Image 1: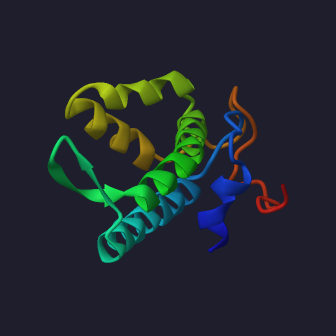
Image 2 (image 1 turned 30 degrees about the vertical axis):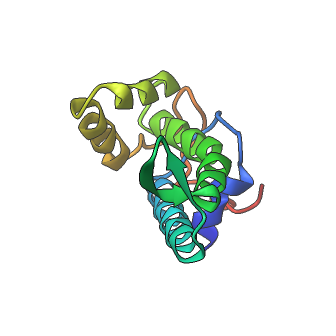
Image 3 (image 1 turned 45 degrees about the vertical axis):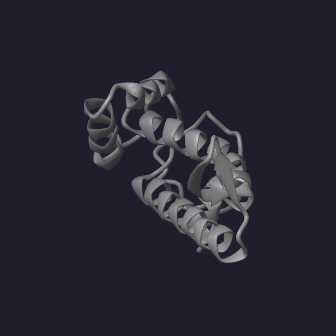
Length: 131
């Protein structure tokens, strides 16, 4: 659980590096929260009707999505820093299909051992939970 909430503790910190474990555990947490919000919206009947189309999401989903969007972007940028890439590489996800695949490959790539231009190796840092 600590790994899932570490990105929330660093809510809008775009500097430094994040391990693969931190990124993927937060991503799993993000998906669980959004899926739970989607289910709650459908159970409570709070789905939004946009231009007379019945959508599956509602207010709870939108609040969850918006509130966790900044931590998702910040942990993604820090993950890119771990493989010695600029945070601007995150924009590659906007390239249809290929961009998402490329980002996933970068996210599963092992980080640089030792210090790089973005900071010390997060695996070597034993006090990772002290913020």
